[in-house]
Image (cartoon, rainbow, N blue to C red; front, side):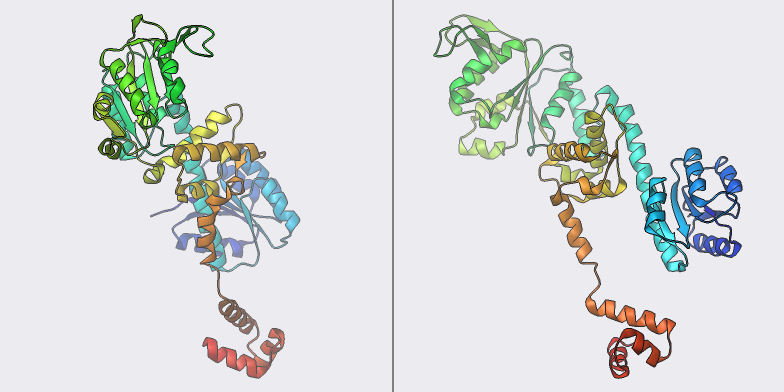
Length: 442
């Protein structure tokens, strides 16, 4: 199976032929040029996934070629080749848009290792750019998008029940998007042009709960300096989202149950019965079944809320949605700027387990955007905890001291087959060299 198209530019024919053979052997499709102007002309005709550009060339050098190629094909991932490698050259090349550079002479193994790494980066970058376009197209209309099968089924159910007034109970861990789903249901309903009221049940003290949801009249209790409309009345003809409904105390469950039966209530300190028309969607991160069994959650109250039960999966079970969600939050918090996420950073986000779910991801992106002064979210802008798993994985790949010692001796012996010369370069005696060769089976 053919991989990407690769443009190779070098004024040395022999090097071109060697690189061509190396790339072809790994199913890449190389095109070689010893004249950079001819290569640039070809780049105007077809798209190249990658380009390897020699630094010292005529009539224009590698940096000039790189600059012109970036204008012609900005999505081509480029690598500079140089026999005159230096930090200054590398920095200049990276600033000019090169992804990496390689110093001549290099072995086939070194070259192909770099090529595979560059190609992986290129594919990830294409995926990121594709996601940005998809976010622009699909999130622009306020829809929730997901590649996860379970989430797609949930969204389908959400649309199916949106037109009815059946109460919905959404369950899931903190940060899984319960409020977002409730808004999705509201936005797809006939009530979408009317208010969407949010009541955070865990944040309201029990002594103020009744006043908050039903309202009160002036003088009904200390501090009631004027009449106040309650949350249900404010959302008349719309939807009320009861967040963290499992935190409501049993006395308040009784009062809410009476309201839910016929949508009638009285403001605190008033004897006038009022009526509203609201659709109730509630959410909890608690185990409702266990709370009902223990008596913490009234069974009749539970049945009144749970006409339809929806359980949202945690983010760790729908990791295929992480790229889309990350791009959504980038777009949400940097609408005026074109900021992208690097493939390396995206890979770390995909590998992290997200105990705080979507809310944690949102906070990570907001933090990274503050640090991304260069318009790119890089892996170093992510919190330390996201690095930890990667660091453990990397540390397990580090060679042992014996492996480093063995490989160094092998490299010296390749260049100096005379044991005496090799021992002198290694700084050890002939006897020690003989012993190490026997120990390492060299």
